[in-house]
Image (cartoon, rainbow, N blue to C red; front, side, top):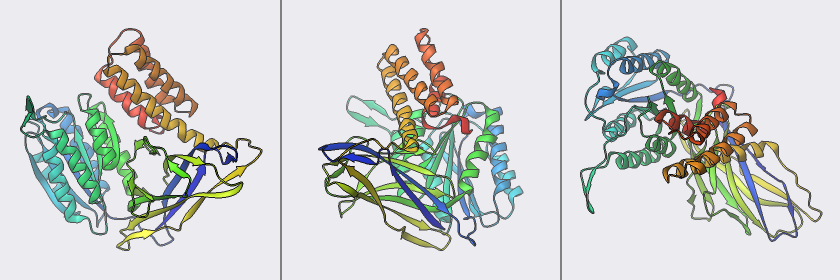
Length: 427
């Protein structure tokens, strides 16, 4: 399995007379299978909410979705299942797939709904189970909940008890360091969208919304198809800038495909930067956008950066592999004319849609309904520019409701968040 790495600037020409020029650098990364490469074994942990609110049809449809996944697992794959409510327990310990029907039978008998929602305990047990089967495999968790998690009690300046949400984020960070990917599923419309988005973003995974129980099978199946295509794991984008070129200070790097995620940047000892990408899928593009500033540069074709991917290949049990170094060039010209790249412009607009929606949510939380509606309308127009009609409809509907003096329901807020992060028409 190899890495494909491509790069492009939104405008390849730079005015030699300018003391500072801003550019967006789009980096596209995906795995390419060789002639004899096989699919990697999966090490899958399902971390499932069985609190009282999941009773009845919700838990039945989740069991259906889980059974569908188990039927798609192959010999050599591994499965574990953790259930949580007020406490958490391992109902299927990490094991190789040998008797799928027995596993399904145990899940049916043990996954009954009652009690509260302590997500962190489930997440902690799930990580422990995943760690038992990581060798030579793609390790992924599906975390499903319909609740918020339980907050610790605070009296004046003392914390009494543990805050479930804070523990969840710390566990997601731990999982990423252990090369485990966490995908989150919000079930219904009462789940904590900030928490589940952060867990997925930090854990290198995907946030999905199961608004109605009957969508569970489809959403599980869609995401399972994606993780089956993973070819390489623990990937990092390594970015080295030449003197007189720097990253923007605020939110310099973001992923824009397949979902939009703000990516943290780590500084390396040699002055370069490392950005964790996590798992790389075969022939499914991961697109990352870096916001850079170029100081005054000499005339001519100038190398402004070098790119490389560091990754693990579980198929051959090798870690810390490096792709060939790829230079990024800009044409520094005296008679400047823009040389715009339409594909990079699409990526810029995808990121703008996400950030405009974030601003709208912030304004709504501050009580500025008019400002929120305006920003949502702007985000809807941006979505239309990139051909994302599904997101445009969701964003404009929310804007119209605010303008009519209506409150946005929990369902509206969830749909708005998902629309900001993904291209809805793909699904």
